Length: 455
Image (cartoon, rainbow, N blue to C red):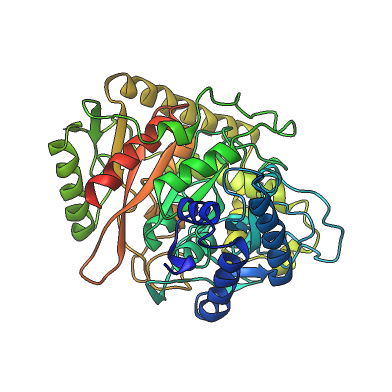
């Protein structure tokens, strides 16, 4: 099999048997990046020499029978939000000076490095990861591998496009309002936002309690293995959760039939594209027939968009204030968000946090009855690249077309997007699985069940 089509688990199995080496796999991935990325724009940095050196070290560990970790030698890309030792972290912004020491690994990079994974490069992000498509004044437009005329989504659009296009089996992204799940849905991959604090983060995100980090892969199994690596503790994150008692790789394939599942096609207020709704309806019907007891019901909350936008703008303004020269170079749309944030008060912020808390309480009660909630990940499929909102939609902000994602950043719940079909035009559609806080293992297990069911 072509190494660029293999999952992380398949690569590790091939390394263990000697059927393939880390250098061969890494070379294939790097060649694929060179071949395909010119038309996609998923990477803002590729380190061929560094990746091959890491792969050679991994190959020696496998030769002697002492791999460093679960995914030793597997190529991985890192979103250009995470500090990564030896590489600049520019956050898609021209206001960040690349000519400075880059001597610190974020917890994400440190854990991947300790596991022996091979860093091939950094993936693109809109400036400071502020919106749900991936373009920036620094790196231009990131496009969808299924149709380069369309957006890959965002803000982890580079990561999603890289995985979907065979430029590495897995990546790591961030999600403050859907930034993992949105591009996962648009690009047809798996994208997991774990419970807030499950994956340690440093420096602290300006978006605070909204911000999560998580894996982006082609399969739920690969996501589970990455979670075992990424969820290890780091003393630099005071909000981190205690390490899980069980491994994700040991739990993702567990029995879930008989559980009570809620399905909300529209959360009670979302307008969903009919073709997207039909694809998701069909998959949910299969889930019900296969033994999960599905009830069509809405959680019962109204759209929390206003509270989300207050928290989002406050975070953006807080960070941009610290970036000299940002006012002159900032993405115009981000500049408007910055201005909004500057007009907000501490009372506005705390009132928005109160909305988030009430939403969390409501969802906690909801999950006393239903183990998980299923929804479409997105109400639409990918649209024309280079636009913050679908052309002709009349919408004013990106959050208005991502109504299934940001509510569960406000509640800090785990949520995953898995690909469940394609439209007549060949565009991917995702199903979202949401669980109560701290139920990351359950969300992965239900996602794996659905993945198996429709395979």
